[in-house]
Image (tube, rainbow, N blue to C red; front, side, top):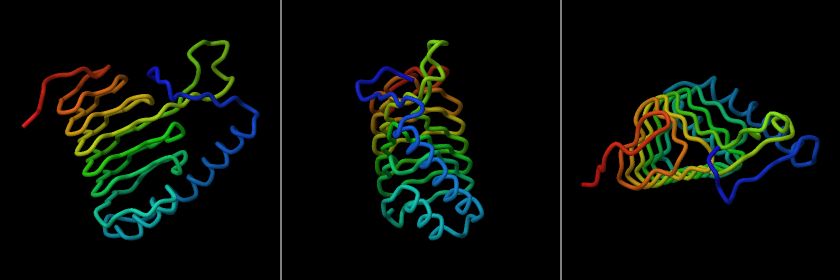
Amino acid sequence: MSENSRAKFIPRRTPESAAMVANVKRAMGITAKLNRLGYDDAAEVRALFGELTGKALDEGFFLIPPFHATGGGDTRVGRNVFINQNCTFYDLGGIDIGDDVLIGPNVSLITSGHPIEPSRRRDGVTAAPIVIGRNVWIAAGATVIGGVSIGENSVVAAGSVVTRDVPANTLVGGNPARVIRSIAD
């Protein structure tokens, strides 16, 4: 997870960790229903995703199941967002998706992890937000790590692992992702 001033730590065996586990169970129940739906069930998918996030979605929202999540209540989705099949959102740190965002198949947005130190690894969960700006395209198989912001109009190339902020109007790619070039109009 990238360094971030909004990062948090949730210790094991606390009321906060119990709430986290309850939220995972709730999300798994909702996504199980969502994943029984098909491409032509867009309104039902939108309704279930809205139930997952606790927020109404505009009619421009489109998601192709299957979809996997460990929460949902900390995910905010803008207008006219497309999420392709087999995406995974771990939103414990918060996921904010701007308007007109395209998310390719097999994309993972992972806001949570564990301490790096071996002696502390099982002490709890770390979490930091992901912010995705307006008109971003995250291509197939990319992974975005907590603590990262992706600037508007940017493209994350297929298979990339984004561990640092992405400036607006850039193409990034690789592992770890780095700026390839500007894509300003």
